[in-house]
Image 1 (tube, helix red, strand yellow):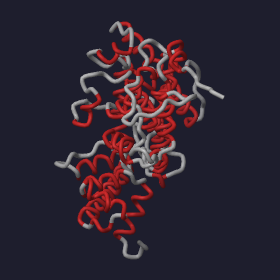
Image 2: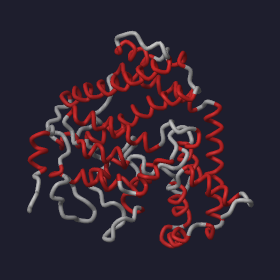
Image 3: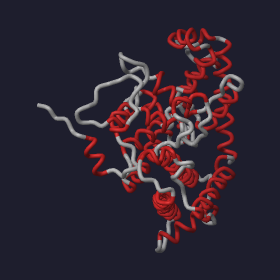
Image 4: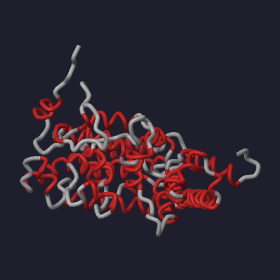
Length: 382
């Protein structure tokens, strides 16, 4: 029995005129037949969820290394929180939830072990050889490194999802963006991911920092965004500081999301955005916070940088992480025969530095630590 669903009609009826629609996709690298009951962006989302790189996010650091505790955010839980926030924003603005979620789920696929510390160290090690940046690596994963289909390399995602990955929180003048129209703005769905990502990691790093004891409740109460949230909460906070912090952070997230929706909606009107092409051709990004919220959010980021990310315990974790990345990189590049067979084969096509980059970037924290022990501790079996 034929069961084709007309997604074009559904999207035309329910999505805003400036939303990205499946009917307007620039397609996939390798042409495929459309699916009878899944839209193009739904298929992207599900391919990302089922890929190996997505599963590995479970054991990659957000701030706290995996073995520091079971309740701290990992790169996977962070990604899920970004996707949840992105869906909420998209639904409220009648944008394409499936596209927004696809970009959100893929935005950190290329992240190294040990969070931004690992990314920074790998970038330093590859200085003069293209460096390292996780958005570029995420795109490389979905276009080439994933091996799930017999007909093509990568996941063969739509152009719009791939554009959202490479244009995430960055400038568009890199060589790998050339086929993704660097002169154009990304879709609104892609633009809101930058802010959903920021809302998630700022507030949840704050939550983890308080839970870990590295940040004190009294420290955060002076933050402008915290005071705004307390006022928005509108009633007496619980007597328990743990519960008071949770209620305030939950309110902060709602405050930031609401401001983003309202301010972006106002910007759409201000720039006279009437259709999807207007979004692409606009001279500036449309999504953003209001001036007051942006100022308060910048204060929060500065606070986290100075009081959490530079806390001596986090610095100690970071130092160990840098050492592991640096020593693995040196061992593999000096001794390619220590690489697993499939990576030794990849050297012929990609060269040693690119191959080592792919191998290290794909590691989980746990695997990197185990591999480091195997290669440096004579008492550990290889």
